[in-house]
Length: 142
Image (cartoon, rainbow, N blue to C red; front, side, top):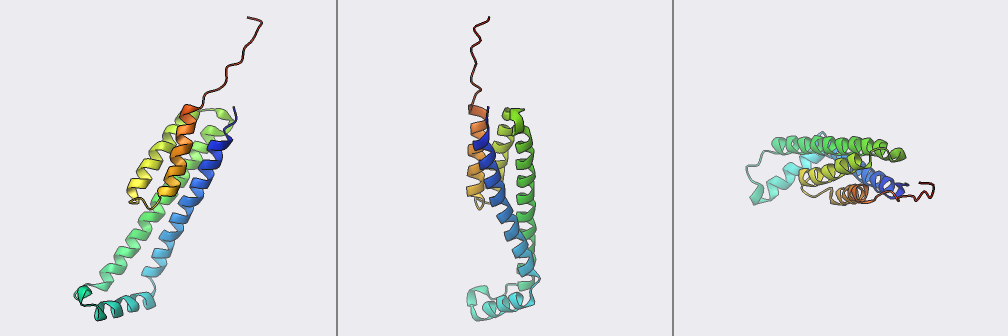
């Protein structure tokens, strides 16, 4: 049985997870940028609501968030590739479906629904893996 739909959805979902990882790298780049830190300090100086906020701590939090998105994105991509290997040749579609559904739910929750599009793609691919059955062929010789 061809699993083209599941494979395409998984590849597109992995591409969206790659974008999330790129956002993580962008956060890392911002945390190391002195101009960004200076701009944040200027905003804190002009806004009374941000008075007393340590901007060094804020840049550290941005860096930590960047690493978090990188790790979640890369893990989702790796598990997507594992499910593609399981799907290739229609070897283990049930295992691939379970992996895709678990990754979809956990990544959506872990990124506070930032990865909702990629999670939905993984979820649909996982459900298709579990629901689609091979057509039984009738052999008149038996």
